[in-house]
Amino acid sequence: MPATPVIEIRDLHKSYGTLDVLKGVSINAQKGDVVSLIGSSGSGKSTLLRCCNLLEDSQQGEILFQGEPVRWRGAGQTRHPADRAQVTRIRTNLSMVFQSFNLWSHMTVLQNVMEAPLHVLKQDRASVEARARALLDKVGIGDKADVFPAQMSGGQQQRAAIARALCMEPAALLFDEPTSALDPELEQEVVRVIKALALEGRTMLIVTHDMRLAADVSDHVVFLHDGRIEEQGPPESLFKTPQSARLKQFLSHAQ
Ligand code: ADP
Ligand code: MG
Image 1: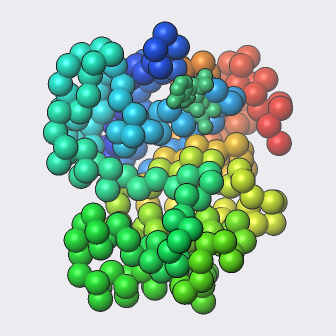
Image 2 (image 1 turned 90 degrees about the vertical axis):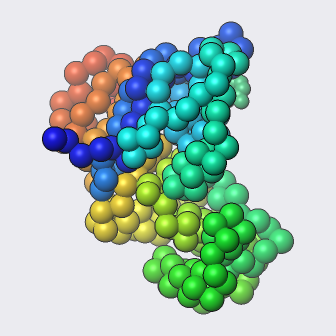
Image 3 (image 1 turned 45 degrees about the horizontal axis):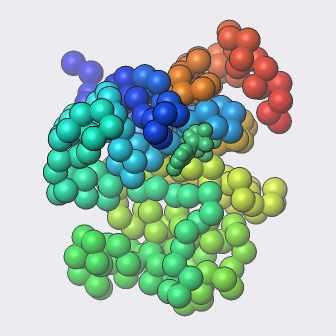
């Protein structure tokens, strides 16, 4: 019997008013899978990621976390998750890393990393601090624990944001264009961390414009076009022998 996916999306539809953004998207990620989402700006990549961890409502289709379907009340435009405890469980297990880091500027790096485990998960301070410091070491900024985000480079801030996501001990990480705001040399610092996480067997959904990153780390790549999956497959075939004209065109413009 196949293992239960960590995240499974079935035929998801999402609109903002009359704008249909996701038009029946299905994806799943098994434990240890790295799934990359690629596609033009506006194709629905961020929306899909935000629907996965219930930062956005969706109008139709199913979302399952470790085999457990999200329970809804209402339907269509009035559909919302029915169970707050379930939403919290899913959200804390699918930690998101954003393009713009979103660190809290009034807190030190260490406080940023400790905040949610302490105050959302209500974990013991000493063990959270030990874990947070170990994670900062792991992403190469152990010496930055006591500085504020504004005192760090973008690459360091993004690595702090990754440490913060990891400190929740999530079942999967969701990355939304984690390197897009960075200069090329800082981008590589973050790419190295993401590659190390992939080698560790972390389950990850990665929205990226970086085709080399997608090719290097992914088990599966999904090309979204206009709210639908236009093509998907293992990176070797998707990048080397794209089938659809749209993917061919997209790849010819990507570096
Ligand atoms: P991508 O991440 O692939 O660039 P998005 O998921 O951000 O695409 O956006 C998909 C579409 O949804 C775009 O047309 C965008 O303008 C629209 N959109 C995204 N967020 C909102 C929102 N909060 N309200 C209205 N429209 C939105
Ligand atoms: Mg986006």
